[in-house]
Length: 383
Image 1: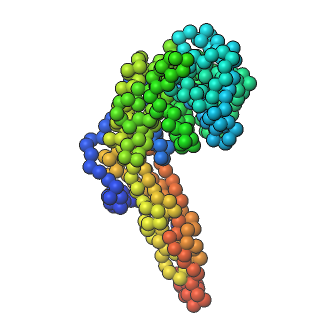
Image 2: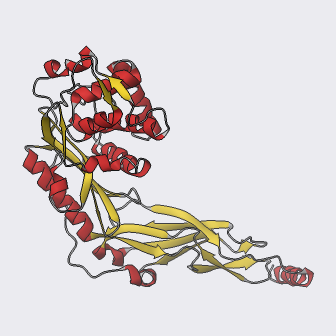
């Protein structure tokens, strides 16, 4: 027999220590063509506006160029003090794309990895990107192949790279969701270098340039990451902020101005921190129900979950959370502690259904010979 037990209000009471009282849930909208708001710890999407659409990412795709360089610093193939050569081709980036952002590297010079990271991250230097592309991939085409392979490894399913800079190309595309996932990966995997993203300004060739990410200066807890702009893509930004130990990542794209992208990204971050909260719905190993047992030393077994069951949601959604325990019962003994016996199905308004394993909280051995005789007698008498 399949058992299905549903929790609603009584379930929410278990998490009362984690709840807060709030106003009516905000209806999140955006003027951005594409946008996503991501909870860093869980990877949950709090808000999505065309966030899986493949669109021109402009300079936000320089995060992939940065990632491949940081990967080599982390594994020791490169050191921050190592130098890479500035070819004439890299130097001519200023002529191929007039008006593009540059670090203004001197032709035939040798520049440290540290300088290149600052040039790409702080100044959005296209010439610095090409230097990295040639050093790692031989040329931009080879580097693009490396970028696409790395994107596949990182699960960026809506991204395709053609160059190292994000300059317009009909086949150079990323989704806002992929940009957010790549950003979260950089924050998580390269903590020793993440401080580069909050450097306020950088001077090279006697040219001082401020960080183009104006979120850093808006007193909202922002510490990264990258801006972008082309005529084809509009204005975009990927930002991350941390407040009270909680981090969110936001991406907006397709906006009409620099001010619009900054204000919209900041607005979505504020909504995320204000309106959404992490809730521990069920603590790890907490008893959440019982199931009947067949042929066991006891006639019931307590049920639980192996890992804490958490969710990010607006305060006003908590009263409508439903949790169902599904298992085939009675469960035949012997039962081992931690044995998977069914599933826990969680329904949160506006989110996809989640399913996690339902496990036995304790061991239940088989009953002794006398008990088995009694069970057999009951079965005979019951037909």
